[in-house]
Image (cartoon, rainbow over all chains, first blue to last red; front, top):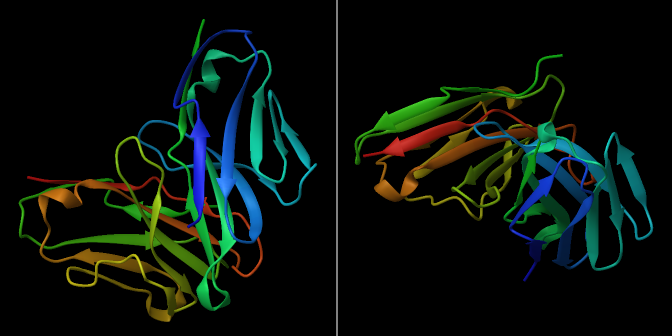
Length: 113
Length: 115
């Protein structure tokens, strides 16, 4: 069964304190790994797509990396406005050749000023 | 460019009543998804459309849930009758196409409360 596990479930950081969020996955046929940011009361906002092990992508203070079993979202010198829930999702091949997007539970990040 | 538009934003209904949600995807996006998100959980797929065809509805509780996407653009998701356990956020998303790893863009969601 396809599984996506995010850790930790919640993280509190001081402004400027860098850290990493982990997303581990067990899927049959990875067709892409996605990171989303979700603010309270809003839908998920797309951040990154990673396709193959070794790939990295950056956006402002965020950097996403991918290995064969997990992905990391590195946050460098975070600011309070980075506070949100970060969701990881993997696209896998489903039955009949169809594809499915499976989400983790998310990781709630709080950055204190 | 307008994003995915959903309405209503909030809905409170009594149990056993019907409810419907509406979604207008990003222009040109062939693939449309309906997701359910419970508090503290990630989104879970209910149904996926490729144009007007429902290609993955394995997670849709068909005894009370139905969906349609007429003309391959707007979509509605209906629950009849609603149960207390249906209280959640219903998210609509769209992407250019599936079959390739194109990202999905989400709407704001409809928060349903069944009392």
